[in-house]
Length: 159
Image 1 (tube, one colour):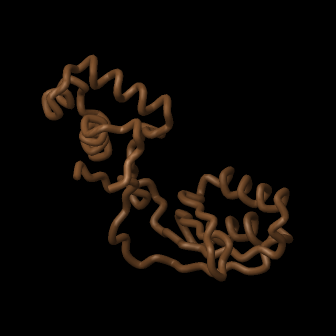
Image 2: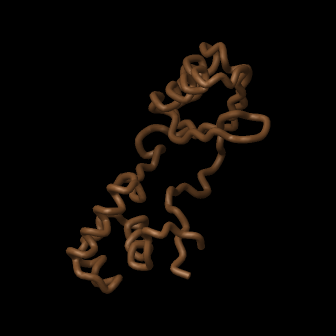
């Protein structure tokens, strides 16, 4: 595994634990990786400050809060001018329904993951994000049937 020069085996071991459960007490992390709790705290703070750890969040099941439909959307744009690209990115960033957004290579320009409570709610999102944007030439909606895997954990290896 290629790793940053700033991350050692202790950092990677701490990250492995935190990716599974960010509520594990630093004392327990220290016991598991053979460091003191203050050393763990310093390492976590350094990784937060440097951007290695971007957030400590709770992963919520969308269906449990009424957002039972997940849609993957391929978005095609007409013009790749810098200001237009930034404008469409901003609209995706500001849309709470958009859970993930990727600029991609290939036929599409963006791939989005959207969660909504109903198809009529998706129609409103599509109107706002795609139909009302003159730079969107077309979009393709893929309604998911089964949530097989979801996660944001980065594969780490101590090898």
